[in-house]
Image (cartoon, rainbow, N blue to C red; front, side):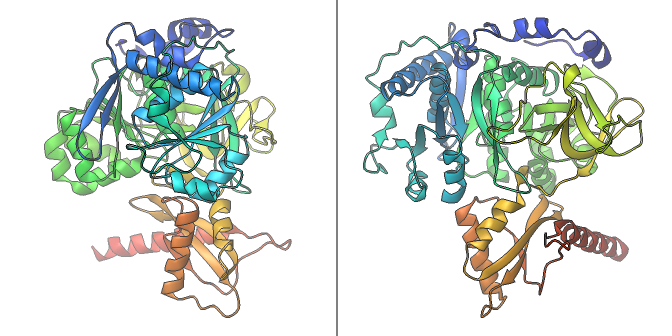
Length: 559
């Protein structure tokens, strides 16, 4: 559980996939079950699976044995409803006890768990439920009303406080589970069968569904060991929300596959809450998005005084880590914060590893995780490029046994080209074999660790009667990496006032999610377009980058 730090190059050279699989799971690639791997096999001793910190400051601990029994009860309920292996069970749930029971119970019967981010509005939820044909949604009472606006919503099971918030026809989660049997043998599946259904943002359409196969558990666990450097004695906290890939893959699945506790913190996330939790649980291994770390830096001495000497390692993912963040953590907290790169489609494949020794370069995304061959290619010729030449960051599928992405569900996947998976991001190979992230080659916006597709925001804007046309881009921002900025063409008879801008912001926020609304709205006379009429977002984005750079230069000149 606490491996000695290994040499990266030796680990890559001697990588043994079959040996890795046998060490990671108890089952085999012909017969395995995610609930067994992430719960049952750790339930013999009284091992803690979940540390639940509630918004009111109360807390509770739940063992693997308890979750084994409760997931069996939920599995019995699912089979009573005719839900079986391969069916989709969705969770519109905040972090916590009911979420883990829902996930594990779905996995126990061989079903596929689908996360629904609790900040999503009805429109975003509707698309995500209709595409895969989910059989059941488990919601909490606070989010239940959103489902009333979802066309064709499946059956709903609601987690309530003494029945409050139930809608007609709902089941009440805990009372329904209570009398059911705690016996239910996990249904075995093959490694290529799905156990998660995720959605990833795109630039030219709605969010795209993808199935995560059971074999990915091996890669998730290896990331925790090699890159996050997770040890049994660590107090580990992944602050990412489990409604998204990084929180679900590496805040729940990865740690639980190792039999370690999940620290789940409910309620609003802010600086004081973060410091309170870190102190209460003596957090030593921290993971999250750069937005969180920039928030900590902004607090300065308040953070440094409390955390210096407490943190052992810190991992960052979701967007490139600014060099000043790395330097601040080293100078003020005496801890290494390492940048990791990945996607919903493939997990984390390019890392500055905490538990593998290799050169570290500030600003570099790191080295390919063992079991992956990550290269930089020319997008047209697919020729692998030498050091110093920018190209498309890609995975050589033929030489990457840990790579698990099989394409989007029921739709074409244009990112597969020959033997390569093209990430759509621009990168540059360094002379020592590490890779530096250059930028995105698409229009997806990276804001506060979330990836937001412009099409979703534009579609929501166009639902408003005042809007005739809209284009959405990412605008550089010191705190959030990027903010969402919308350029809106109004219908005749409407004026681009601050009041209308606020109305549009609230409209999008309510329809999509709390992180996916435009913080800035501009009302130009027209949008830049190609001769065929396609909006040229890249021109708008470049203009915003140039304005940002001019402002930064002006600030430097004035200081």
